[in-house]
Amino acid sequence: MTQDTNDVAKSYSRVLLKISGEALMGDQGYGLHPPTVARIADEVKSVHDMGVEICMVIGGGNIFRGLQGSAQGMERATADYMGMLATVMNALGMQAALEALGIHTRVISAIRMDEVAEPYIRRRAVRHLEKKRVIIFAAGTGNPYFTTDTAATLRANEMNCEAIFKGTKVDGVYDKDPKKHADAKRYDTVSYDEVLSRHLGVMDASAIALARDNDLPIIVFSLDEPGGFRGILAGRGTYTRVQG
Image (cartoon, rainbow, N blue to C red; front, side, top):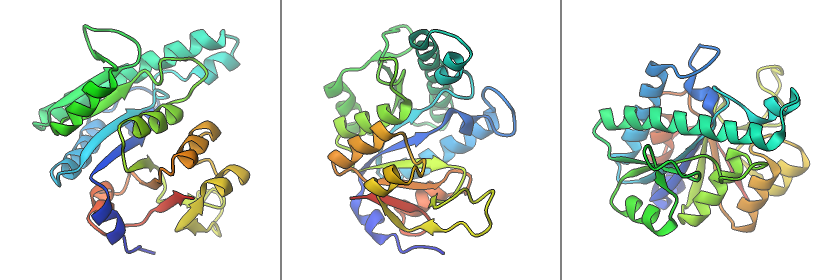
């Protein structure tokens, strides 16, 4: 079912796009797949060309996932820092793809590495958005034990974004895994509390609670659908809206 998304088209002038590191792998089992990165950059450019201010957070699971390292016996904080560095690599890859399309981009890292990225300074980041630059926030929150989901919700609030757009492999939030269950039902809208109580897996609990406490909607859509990101903002498409 395609939804009427005119409310989205009219409402959002500044958004945060959250994608997983795995989204950059394509059909590979590891790392960056340049054609896939270029395709996602095209999606971002199409929305940027509409005049929407965009910031991004990209996970690092295609290179290293802190929780997996911890599960294999690595000390958790060290594993998480390694995962943060993986997000910087992904951010730089996305920056290169966007700038190849003529989009001015800034990578802003929560861990200082001045030779490759700017340090996070909120007012400077806001100014980049006002100048129509795409910002890619890297290195999570800069702290272990926090996921890039939480980092995305934190940065979206700090940047006064009007919504988080969560790009996934499916076109919204379902009551169960649609890849395993043919009778899975997609929600048009779902509350933060239901996401938490039913463990629907949109984002981790800290991220959902932070979004709920600040009344920040989360739009879950398929990143694999060509034109899906722009389509929702243009008033068409299929998605789930997580709200109060």
